[in-house]
Length: 166
Image 1 (spheres, rainbow, N blue to C red):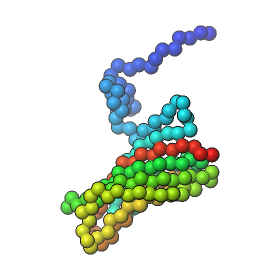
Image 2 (spheres, rainbow, N blue to C red):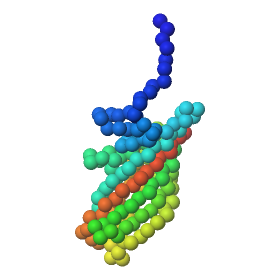
Image 3 (cartoon, one colour):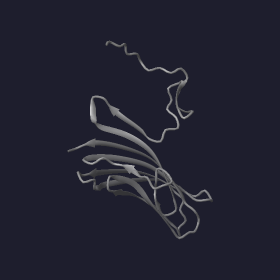
Image 4 (cartoon, one colour):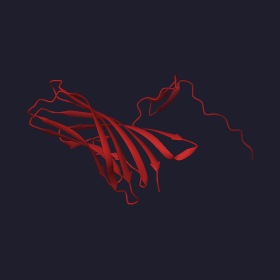
């Protein structure tokens, strides 16, 4: 039986559970993860995430400890724009560019990281640091706070570009 296929169309945008995710002007909104793939090169993808954390912790995608998933047999270039801020408004901001490899068993190996410090207001008697952290098929940043009892709120806007290598 023949059928006619037509383009999917929605006047006013698309929503999930009454939350607009694509508006009428083609803007994507309120999306947890965004993945881009080229239909000609399906072995590569780019994804964007927002990670959060408090004080000394591994940054998370949610409140239950979810980290960025990394597929086995991939090489990934990860760019993170990270900000730590205390209640007084003192800021540590950096851009971390990291290369990782994830083998067939899911082991993530951090090959290198280049750090560009954008702003460092951390008082001399305190230590705030942020480092890339790999685990089995996962990636995040590990934040450390020392020398203060003030809360340090961390946020990272992170892009992961991966390509299958095996």
